[in-house]
Image (cartoon, rainbow, N blue to C red; front, side):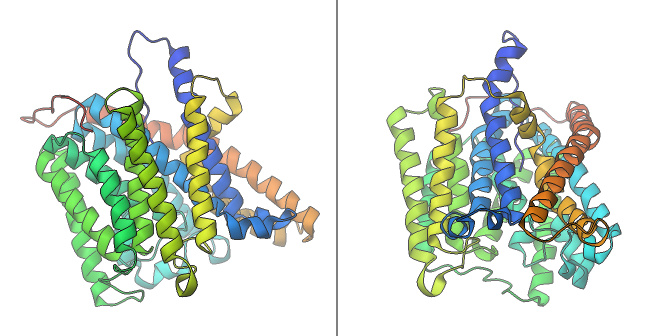
Length: 430
């Protein structure tokens, strides 16, 4: 998961600015570790771990933290720059360099060591198109890897905040959060998942991939060539329609994710005096209650396991835990976090993308080459080796792939197309 770097005012010292960001990096670090623990099955090695897994989905706990952080900080980077084109060039060069490298690595690795889903190669061209536009979750395409689904939701959020910005819609995050929360409760039992394509591959899948990909590429092209209003609106309409009508996850879960990200924006605006405190608190409570209620209503009985979690308890507890963790970190935001934790937060996007690649490669190495014991002590040893490899590789990819990509993005975004006017940064939309 990603988030933008918040640029400090020139009068603020780097040390003070770093402290302001420590809590966000700390949350990213927690989120990244939770996702790794969930995907690696580490809970199975802990007494009571299976019970915990059934009652709290650590993966959802982690990604909801990522979504809250994105909702809190990403709109700020757009509003402070006042330039949708620069924002999207920055996003593209933030997301894609590492993603492309890891996908190429996955293609080159033997099948039993690759993190790529084998189903990707059933319709390689179509799946590649859907994944590279980061719309695989809403088009019926097969994901490259298990972690790609969250990037689809991030993209739709970016589409919407870009449209709000270019249209000058003020106070947009508040109604957006409330609307998504209401949709989760009211539409969760009515709107089905993948209504346009169904769960199996058909001609409709190809048509939807073609239509959505063309709209996303066209919209980004318009934005990056200076026609931000047309491009942002096209992106927002496309992304929201695809999410509402054809998300792989149940509708209530998709709506909860959007509500959560916009609630993160509401928190930022409330904290900085741009939104009445009582209104901000009320929005957050409504979103949290709607998420818990929709999980209870639509992920139990015959629908148990319809979400990404094993049952409604695991979903609700994970969601509430993410909110509590975010609230505690926000309250302690002026405290300095350990340097190792903030470093992990800074490289969390690398950790998020790299960990499954390392998992498959190291599991094969531990089993077939090192032949480590398969009992509990041996599995702990394998996990320790895997975690160390993830941190080393993530540090390397952050330094040599992510950072150069971000620098290139900043360079290109500073070169507006001839004849295009950079949008003036007006009052922040709420």
